[in-house]
Amino acid sequence: MAAIDGLAPLREVIAAHDLVAKKQLGQNFLLDLNLTAKIARLAGDLAGCDVLEVGPGPGGLTRGLLAEGARRVLAVEKDARCMAPLAEIAAHYPGRLEVVNGDALAVDVQAHLTAPVRVVANLPYNVGTELLIRWLTPAQWPPFWQSLTLMFQKEVAERIVAKPRGDHYGRLALLAQWRCDAKIVMILPPEAFTPAPKVHSAVVHLTALPGPRYPADEAVLQRVTAMAFNQRRKMLRSSLKGLMPGIEERLLAAGLEPTARAEEISLEGFCALAREVARG
Ligand code: SAM
Image (cartoon, rainbow, N blue to C red):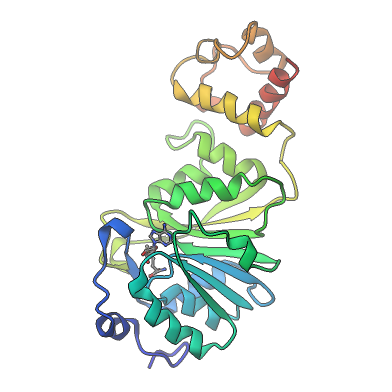
């Protein structure tokens, strides 16, 4: 029996259901329930919150979330083999775990959730970034979630929290930090997972701000940063030449050196430039 909930240890669950990990589903499982409870605590106070979990697998993190007091967990899992072990957890926590067997990119999760919502997940590496970008670009802000506590490959986590002039700085950092506080709260070695991936992993915690840190039109900001980072080592006056006539004047009006490179420009600088460009 596992100490956190009295259910069977995960190794037994996996053996009983013959859950051989599938690489194409990004299956690297966390089997240490003390660790999954710790990740659940990193998400903040879960009491009174619905939690969206993408990719529960055999349910290690799900059990951590429920043991740590989440009001309800909505778990979306693509692999039908995981439904039986997840049903056992649901029976142990009556009315608190809803499992949807489907692709997280296709399921309308909001229809199943009641505010306040926190998202907590050990994401499959193949769809992790796409899901994050969707959560960061909802139709309206503030989004349906209060916080995102997400496990990524460490390199992706570094791209989310990166600052100017660092190797990892780019569009993902700008998108994430424009309307969120973002920090790495845990780093895990490959051996923490079964099977062990090739690289380290990291948990990123993002908290939604009430609105943008600096004003800018979202579409214009995205266009400017996409062009600037497409040619990240070129000077802005050249990488942004196709954006509009007179881009050098717009750069100067935004307080930016036309000879600067994308990787040197802060979020505040890009927002100032987006406002200048939006003036038309
Ligand atoms: N949460 C479990 C844990 O921490 O041990 C499993 C994490 S594993 C890295 C990723 C999980 O996401 C797998 O269970 C996999 O089957 C599932 N998955 C992969 N692609 C998915 C998708 N598009 N939608 C929902 N789940 C998906």
